[in-house]
Structure formats: structure tokens, C-alpha cells
Image (cartoon, rainbow, N blue to C red; front, side, top):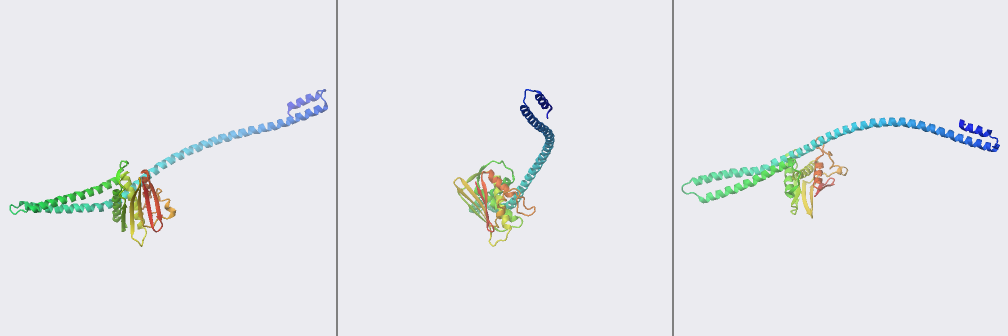
Length: 341
């Protein structure tokens, strides 16, 4: 028993005025108190041990957390460096994709520009001959044919108009190439959408024909005359048309079909909404990859043939114009890309 309680008990037992029954009761009560005190002492001792153990564990945990914090900081720094390198690599790949499409576009431009230049050269040669003939006629002192001179001058005037027309066409093609290659202002400007589509579908086609493994493709344009000028970042949106056409040509190259390859591009105005459809009758897109084709770096091309950024860039440009790009496909039959503006 606790020595203090034992002292109290001994003192109480010496008091004669207390009966034996009361002494027995006091003895029992004091023993119960002693028992409870013993339990409390045990609990307090255990609590102290737990506190000391907890303090040690807490100190170790703080040290461990500090080490982990430093490790996380180092990991974050490494991730920041990796992210910077990844962004730089992505920017390079996007630039490569732009250069690839520019290269194909340039091939189409070389073909397209040849026609107006041939006209310019031919009309120039004819005009030179007519001028020589006219000068000879004008040098005659007698028997000068004024009617012939007048007709020749009219022919020269007509030829010069043709030269100007085809020269302007050549200039337009070169301007298209420059607009496609430069970064541009990024500002939207009113643009003749149908004319832009016609221009770049044609250039993309001739680019494919001038490249590796050309195929014969029927180009069908169904352009709604109600589609007038649309607010576009022209140098960006030309890439949309180029990328979708290139994608269609590549798809149709990949299979041998019983029917002739065909690319159909259409526009449709409904209220204040415009829909652009680019359809090919190639192999279609398997369902298992349909949701992936617009993701960056996803490509079905082998090796280093594709970066997987063409359709991703197209998707981003359409979204930047407040539009939506969707894909519909029937395996073995056709694929249609729909742009809603």
C-alpha cells in the first residue's frame, strides 16, 4: 500500500472511538484507493513512456519529412528542366511539321506557277513578233496597211492584259506560299473561305503529285456560294486545309482500292454557322484509334515518316478559331473530317 495511505490507516486503527466494523470499512476503502492510485501511477508511467517514444518518433519523422521535402524540391527542379526540354522539343517538332507541309506546298506551287508563267512567256513572244511586224509596216512609206497596224496594236493590248492576268495569278500563288510559311500577326481578318479552300486543295494536290508515290485522285469541290468572307487567321487556317488534304492523300495511298481515289471538299452555310467537310474514300479509321488521332504525337505512320502533329495542330487551330473538329469514319469505305465554325 502507498506509504501515505498506510500511515493514515495505522493512525485510524489506533483511535479507540472507532468500532471494529468502521475500521474494517476504512481499511477496505483505503485499499481500494491504494489500488486505484497504483493503476493511475502505472497509467501515468506508461503515458510518460508513450510521450517520450512519440517525441522521438516525431523528431525522426520531422527529419524524414525534411529529407523528403528536399528530395521533392530536387525532383521538381528536374521535372521543370525536363518540361522545358520537352517544350523545346515539341516546338521543334511543330516547326518540322510546318516545314514538311511547306515543302509539299512548295512542290504544288512549282507546278501551279508553271502554267501562268508559260502563258506570260508565250504572250510575250507573240507580242514581240507582232510589234516587229507592226514596226515593219509602219516603216513603209507607201502602201502602209493601217488596218493591220490597228489590229496588231489591239492584239498587243489583249496580250498585255493576259500577261497581267497570269502574272497576277503567279503573284497570288507566291503570296499564298509566303502566308503559309510565315508566323503572321495572329489576327483574324475577313477571308474568302471558298477561294482559300479552292487554292490550297489545289496546291496540296499538286504537291502530292510532285512528291513520292503519287496517286491519281479525283478532286470534287462543292462550295456553297452563300459562304462569303469569314474572319480567319489566314496563315493558320491554310495549314488546316493542307493538313487535312495531306492526311487524306496519305490514307488513300496506303491501300489498293477497286474504285478510283476521290477527295471531296464542301462548305455549307446554315444561319451563322459554317460547316467544312473533307472526305476521302480511303481505308477509314479503326474504332480503336478514332479517339486518339487528334492527340499530339499519335501517328500510324512507320518509322520517322510522321511526327503525329499534323492533325493535332489542325485541331488546335480550329479550336483557336472558336470552332470544332470532328471525325466520322466507316472502316474500309471513307473518312470525313468536319469543321464547324
